[in-house]
Amino acid sequence: MLVYILAPFYFAACFLIQKHLTAWTTACCGDKNSKPLNIIVSVIFMLCALLPVFAFFWPVSPVRRMLSTAGYFWFAIFMYAAGACILLFIIALIIRKVRKLPMKAPVFPRGLKIVLGAVIIVLITRTCIYGSIHARDIKTTCYDAHIFKKCETAKQLDIVLISDIHLSSSIGADETANMVDAINKADPDIVCITGDIYSNSFDDLADPDAIVNEFRKIKSRYGVYACYGNHDVDEPILAGFTFSGSKKHPVSDPRMDKLIEDSGIVLLRDEVTTAGKDTYIIGRRDEEKPGTADGSRMTASELTEGLDMTRPVIFLDHEPTDLENCEKAGADMVLSGHTHNGQFAPLTLSVKYVWEHGIGEKKYGNMTSFVTSGAGYFGPAVRIGSDAEVVKITTTFE
Image (cartoon, rainbow, N blue to C red; front, side, top):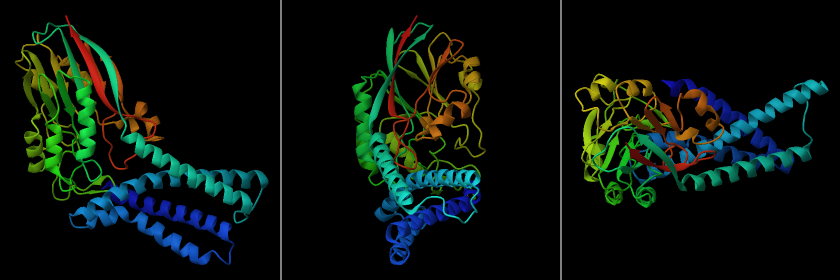
């Protein structure tokens, strides 16, 4: 499993960060006075580094949820701290090369080391606090689309797309209420939720009934429809990495399905339904983790077989990976999420290279694909360089 491969690198990076941190405290306090402080700093750092492990093994309880939330936030701090240490290491190597200094010779004078350390700590702290606040600020992104078909339901439909809610220890009823408020402000005709409603564990939800109450406040003229994503299955999760264990093809927790049903949301798993008089909504199982016993899902053409293709056809597919086949199958619109638009920098820079269509709007013949960055967040409660969003698509018809 990937987590076993990455674990040594994680702890090596933690060792590097701790080494730089104690070197900074030593520079601040002097060699003679720094030992007690270094011990305290090292113990606190070690406990923070092990937070994800504590959360993984702790029994289901409010304490576990607290540890999980803290562990994810620590992970954001860790990534930026590791990046800063690697950058300092590269700068030090360059200076040693240019000045022809031996490897153990100090590169930065004590005063500069103190200033650099303080600046880095302040920047990381401010960045993570800003990212945490920004992650909860849901924006509405608006698009115009045209489908070259007649629609008996209405000449114009306002379709609201939301994805990647990621209900978890850090996203509960209050955050759901914020999302529902953003949805209702868009005055939707149809609401589509394109997967990753959960974060692999139903037990991490502090108050499922309160979440149901919030979802039921969604106001949509022709219904609320959803498909599942790769995190809508029941799997143990450690620092964002899942363990399938004996389950080769994990499935959703029945409690997940019941929450969706109780919320008045129509869950579509390789199924077709009609919104209004004639608009097909086709919800696909996730490509990576479809939640079936054999790990398969229906093809796009199988899902449209036998349909009246003179009517509007809208696909809900969590991962934007099968877009050309959807277009060939007769889809007029495909709604997706999954990418988070990278969620936080510098991962945001990789989206356009990793995904054929990673964010926004893209045409495929007569079909339009829309990919949202999502309304929630996975792992660290941080967004930097990406927005939490609800997407409103004003769709007109021939």
